[in-house]
Length: 239
Image (cartoon, rainbow, N blue to C red; front, side, top):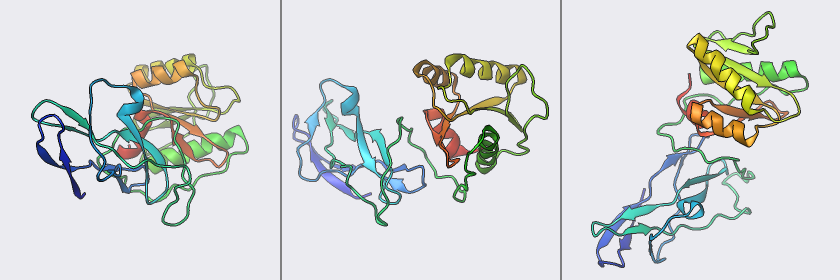
């Protein structure tokens, strides 16, 4: 990444700043575009909006939220590095339309060495489970199977070291659903993953974040999309 000159307005010291590069979920390296010539701003207090910037992947057109570039001068002043704003009309090299995630993904250190996921269109609840099974196999899980018999313990898919639930109902997945899956995984000493067609309630998402449960939402094309940071990390690392 090319460095840009930055001068601290407090001590007048010059720096060469290089924007950190993060991998987009598509695997392409992505970095906030520094706005050359714009004055840096000392940070005196922080807000949520100021700590994150929207960045467009030049390969797939995806819009994601990444940490606002900052530089800590030896004099003790923390400087916010201005970046070029991204507009909704920004395109990609191949003319693709950009998408916007519903959560803030964590930066990842390496793209997953996988082919493009081939989804299974969802028309029934059975299709939803089948598509989730394909996705788990794509992530690298072995021996993904659907339990032959239904039981009071709601487990839709099992794999080596993993259990998964697929919620194909029209209501958002609840806090109780997430906690039940976590307890079942805890008792079996495995990890867990949740897939939902209607999304999740706010408290369910918060609880899953605290428990480290990856949450995915599925559309009718059968393509799971990550909802929280544990899901982003699972995509990055695989099984």
